[in-house]
Amino acid sequence: MTVAESPLDPPAGVPAGERPDPGAAAGGPGRTGRAGRGSRRSPWRQPLAVTGFVVLALWTLVAVFAPALAPYDPDAQAFDTLQAPSGAHLFGTDEVGRDVLSRVLFGARISLPYAVILVVAAMLIGAVLGGLAGYFGGWVDAVVMRLADLVFAFPGIILALAIAAALGPQLRNAVIAVVVVSWPSYARLVRSLVLSARGAQYVVSSRLLGASGLRTLVVDIRPNSAGPVFVMAALDVGNAVLLLSGLSFLGLGAQPPTAEWGAMVAAGAQNFDRWWVGLFPGLAILTVVLAFNFVGDTLRDVLDPRTAREVRA
Image 1: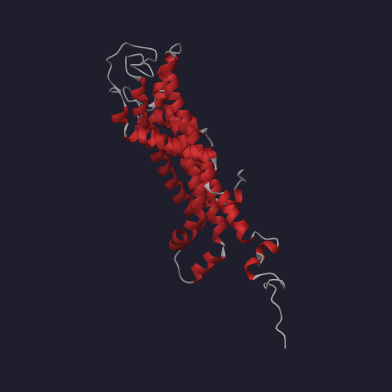
Image 2: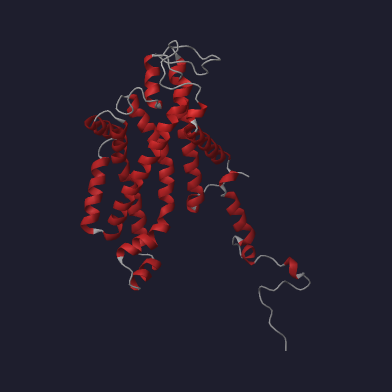
């Protein structure tokens, strides 16, 4: 009596070590295909991702070690005004005789932490409200979405200007204004993710096993919805830097003598013929925003394979 051959057995005469991959033979990804896709989605194989991480790491080190790196006191008005870049002042001096390089380095200690803080605050507020609206629906959904629609009815920068002006020209008030105009985007995103996951089999099973609605939302739905939220947050940090710098540029954010990039660009606009006053803080803003955009795009590729883009080897 002969034993029927399994479709997974190698053909006659083919050594066992050369067995074909069943997944690849069936037209699927197979072991090699899955590994290849995983390596293609590795962030360290993407030049823009590596550039973004390196730039952010450098600016983080600058923010932490600014007192040791800065050649002068950023608030010291001890030099000739509006000196061009030279060996003594690599970035020149501003309109009141302060070293521009020292102020750019110390500006990283204002722009970066405050931008991250406001994005985290907006993400938490929007995620909580959007999650509750999407899961419980009814009047909770109606109230939260109407509040979001009210914020979306105004251009973000105009509403932030109005709120910052009403609260008073101060960096803390500028952060509050940006948080107010930023949380609805997270609320809508999280609401849509929760609505799509609410009817999933694992959520229904959890409820049938006796889990409360809050536990189901936090334990079952949250981990499967966190990826797109983190991607949006990474992209939003760059926008937060721009918004904070814009409010400071208009006099509604950081106040003199605080070393803040937007306020420094505003000083450069008043001394347009002295290009170094506004150029270097503007380049600082540019590099930080581009770096966060690169990192956000990479996180989207890694955390959401459905939107992953092919990366050239």
